[in-house]
Length: 226
Figure 1 (spheres, rainbow, N blue to C red):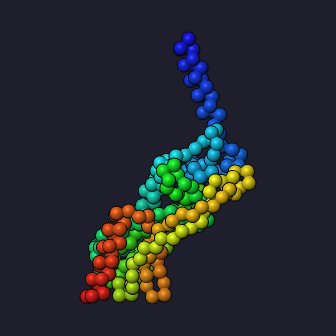
Figure 2 (cartoon, rainbow, N blue to C red):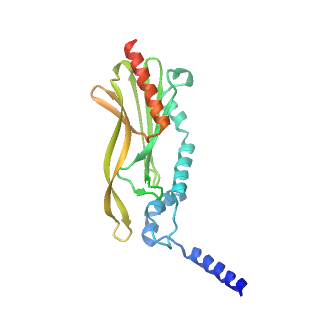
């Protein structure tokens, strides 16, 4: 009898997982999308016990694979036209973080906000100049944005961190194609400040990031006092 019950349970589980399928509303969004982009859409929009779901850790891994495939440190050096011997003034700084404008967003089970737009920045320094390169990409489609800037140390007035509160939509309604409600989230940015302008990039808070920013501020003070 026990064996029969086990067999029945196993069959039921197999049938249940085979029944799991994305709703028609999501399938419309999958058109011309890569498997990774479909997984990203599924992470933000799939709901219900019969929907295929992507976990927070799966989505984090998707982003990390994307970043690794882009080789952004080398791309930054190529765009700016530098080689390693020219950027030894400070340790190269790597900043990363989500962007929430015109993007899907979700509060994960781990209580962390994620979005479908991510930004990676590399900052390099020579004796005379500071160089910044940012690459922004979308996980749900092919959109991307690159930016490069260079500043003379003497022109930089400050390095600052910026915390802003943004209002975002939550609880996606698949049938209506809109969010059911809105919530506020805090975002963190880093800015290179020069007269009349700022270079702003995403910078998730961490001890590594804080140490890197302190090192840049110390170098700026050194340059100003030289």
